[in-house]
Image (cartoon, rainbow, N blue to C red; front, side):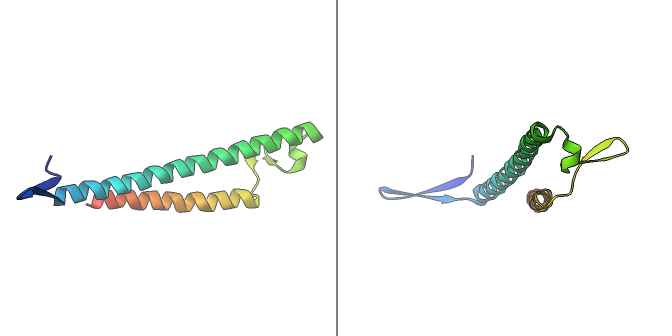
Length: 111
């Protein structure tokens, strides 16, 4: 495939990576970083959503009204997440992960 060169010196064989092989490895490393970041982002939000669902279920059992406990705020019939510190932390981490993913994709495309 042209990824390595082979040189024979008597009974020894030396293998050397080619420029094509280096590019493949660099792209592979970047793709692994992208996939790891995507999985971290997905895992982060799944954890947060399940934590919210668990918290809401506990509050419903304890108080019978989720709205009074401040988990959800209702504005003209629509329900949204309240801006709590944990949500903001998750939002900041997610933003950094998305910026990192975009940078890595740009790095691959630029090559």
